[in-house]
Image 1 (cartoon, rainbow, N blue to C red):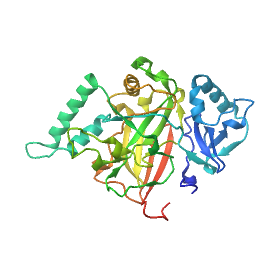
Image 2: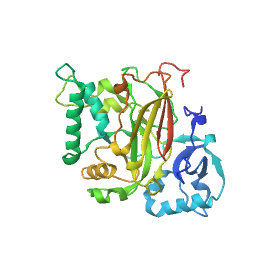
Image 3: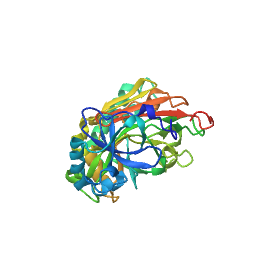
Image 4: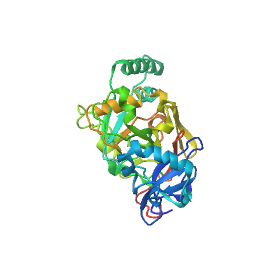
Length: 339
C-alpha cells in the first residue's frame, strides 16, 4: 500500500478496450498516462509526439483534437511504458462540477418502493411492484430526470481505502456509470448531447441512508449534502475511456460484489433516462465544462435492498464492461492500523 492506495489491486484495461487515459503517481508526483492493456505511458515523456501534458484536465480542454492523437499513440506505442501494477492509480479527472441522477434505474426504484411501503394482506408486494412499474414507465415517457449536485471533495481513487463515518451504520454502495464532459455544454439538445461527452468512467456513489430524508423538515425532502459527500464517498475510476471507444453506453453492464458476493448486476438499458437525456437536461440549467461529471444513477441491488450495509473490513469490487474495475476496502476511522 502507498498513501492509502492498494497497488496490487490495480487492474489492467479490458482486452476489448484499445486504450484509455488516467492519472497516476510513482511517488514523485502525478502524471497523465495513456493506458493500453496493463501498461501506462507518461504523456509528458514524449514531446516529439505530443505537447507537454501534465493532467487529464489539460487533455480534456483540447479533447476533440487530442483524442485522435491518443488513438495513434496507442497503436504506435512510442517511449517507455510502465506496468500499471507499479503505479498509484488516482482519480482519472478532477471535476469542477458533479451532477448526479437519482432514481434513474427502473428496477432499483421498484425495489426501493417495496422497502418503503408498509405491506399488508390488502397491500401486497406484487401490487406495489406493479403500481411502481406503471409509474416509472409513465415517468420515462413524460417526465424529466431528477438531478442534484455533488461535492468534488468526496472523490477518492479507485483503489483507496474509505473510512466509514461513525455517525451512522447505514452506509450503502451505489455503482454508477459516469459521463465525463469533453466540450462545453449549455442548453444542448438530446440529439447533440453525446457529442459533448469525452468518455466514461466508474463511480461508487456511496450514500448514508438514514441521512437522506430530513425528519425535522419533511417538506424539504432529501438532503444529499450530508448523505453523500463524506471524504472518500465517491471512489472514481480507474480510467477515462473515450466515448469513441465505448460506443453506445446503453450496452454497458454494471456489476458490483461485496466480499466476493454479487449484489448489483444490471444493464444500462434499465435506465429510465439515458445518458444523452441526462446530459441535455443538466445542460439546460447548468453550464457544463470539460472534466465535469454526470453520474447516471445506480441499478438495483444496493445495501438497502439486501438489508446489509457496509462495515469495516468489507471489500467492494465494482466494474463496468469495457471500463475496468475498482476495488475499495472500508475501514474504521478510529482504527489507526486499518489504513
